[in-house]
Image (tube, rainbow, N blue to C red):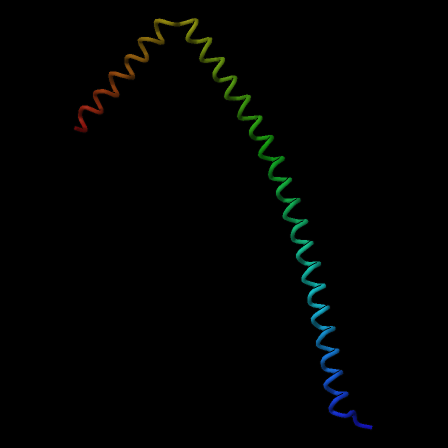
Length: 97
């Protein structure tokens, strides 16, 4: 037998509610998965950049120590080199004006 209009409307409402609930559930699962993946990616990037930071930090420290040793071992050459660089920079700046 055919359903009455009222039963048909009730079935449509029920189906609509189920569809909304399913959509909300899928959205929640997708949102949770995306948050998890973003968190994992963020952690991985932090780890990689921490390693790079440490490498750069050690290289900078080594360069500083090497240059400090050079200046201590060759003070006159260092002062003359700095004066030469300053003189050339002054000549270049003077030409531009």
